[in-house]
Length: 266
Ligand code: PEP
Ligand code: MN
Image (cartoon, rainbow, N blue to C red; front, top):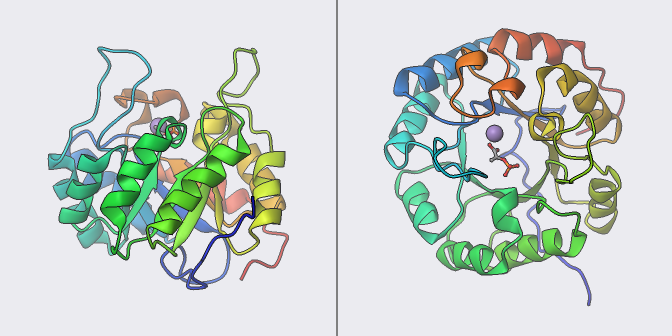
């Protein structure tokens, strides 16, 4: 089957000037204060283009923190207003999508646990029909390129042309130093098939630990990926989800400052 995406060539939703797009913010919105103070410190670095926060958290095991829900969208918008940063959150079903649109969230992303399910992706696509909002689609949990492309196509066929992909690695039973094995050939092949599709790397979920962020980010830039999504928190050790992989805004600033941008990127 022919693979085609109808993509806008306007990338201003993702990044303002040259260089890779930097998206950062906590894994989860926890309190208004946590979100706003993280956002303010991120904005102060001058390196971050978009603020992320998870509002509904798709946890692997029950009885874990599952996100603050709709109230967090108000905090996220306020954090965006105070810092001037566009804001993005994960939507996993029609209800999340409707609420995110109602609160004026600037960019949506679809998480790895949702990309695996065409019913859920289609449900989101149906809500997005006729809505002009940028959407990023994470790779599915399992290494299946067609499933990733299929989710991008469903959102694109709803009329979304400001589309992006997020590479967050693939889960495996194998013991490796990664939380999710990167399998770099997947984003490379996606870029070959769709050269105009921006691809953002998510070193936080690939690595699962602070120590790996710099190395994975550098690899993504060396492969000419279009951006990085890195989780940050004012007090990472106290985070309610993904504590081991979150960094303070100051550490993020240091990690980003050490990266070498070898290629052109427009
Ligand atoms: C997240 O970004 O916090 C998240 C849940 O990611 P993923 O869908 O990649 O597991
Ligand atoms: Mn996370």
